[in-house]
Length: 340
Image 1: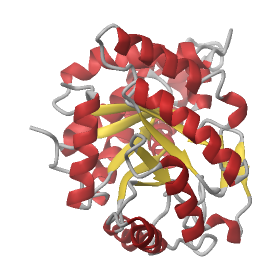
Image 2: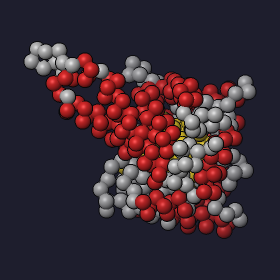
Image 3: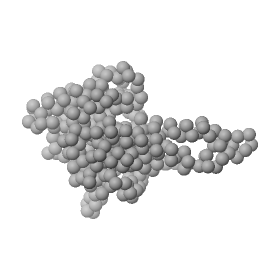
Image 4: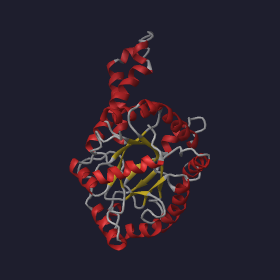
C-alpha cells in the first residue's frame, strides 16, 4: 500500500501524534525529486508525505500552458505507479494555496477526488492545504469551513494556516515581525469555526515565529513552546486534550531543541523545501564545475557525452536529496517507524 488510503493516512497521523514524531513533508517538482523523496523515506524506513505547491504544480504542468491542475494530477498519477516499488507508505498533499489560486488548484483537485470516491476509488490526494494567512481570520475560517466540507466528502484531510508564516514561498509573503505568533484566541476561534474533528479532520499550521526560506541564526525567534499554550487553551475551553495536529512550516535552519519541543507539543508534519532544493542542486553544481570542459563545447570541441548526459548528474542530485530526506526523518524521529 505505497500510497496511503484515507484510513491509513489517519492512522499515520494518529501514530505520529501518540509517538511524538512527525513526518517530513517533502516538496517535489519533478519525477526525479519525487524519486529522491521516496528513496530517502525508504532508506530511513519511514513513511512520509509528498507535496506539491502551486508553483511546483505550475512547473510540472509545463511552461507552454503552466496548468497547475494538470501538473499536480500528472505527478500524483505517476506517484501512484512508481511508489509501489518502495517499501514505505506515503501520502500525497498539496502545499500553500492562497485565495486567488483556489479556483485554479485546490477546488478542482477536490472535485477530481470527489468524483473518484463516488466511483468507489480512493482520492487522488490525501490532503490539501488552504493558506488563508493573508486574509482576515474571519474570512480565512469561513473559506476553511467550505473547503473542509468538500474535503470530508472526498475523504481528504484539510490543512489550514490561520496566521502568517514569515518570508516568501510561491508568491505568498509576510514580514518577519510580532504577527508571526498565533494566539490562544486565534486557536479558539479556529476550533469554534472548524470544530475539533466532528466536522472533519484538519491539520493546523499555527505560527510560532516560523519563516520560509534561508535565514541566519538570530534572525528568527522560534517559540515552539507556544504550541503547548495553544493546546492547553483550547483543551480548557472545549474539554478535549491535545486537540490539534500541528504542522511545522518554515523549519529550515531549526535547531534540534526547537524541533524536539515542537514534536512534544503536537507537531505531526514538518515541511521541507529549501533544504531539499539545495541538497538536490549542490551535487549538480559540483559535477558541472568538476567537469566543465566535458559538459560544454569548449574551443570548437564537442564535450564528453557521459559528462553532460542528464542521467549522470541526475543520479548525484537524487542521492543528495535522498540523504537530506533521510536526515529529516532522523531529526523528526520518524526513522524506523514505517507501517509494517
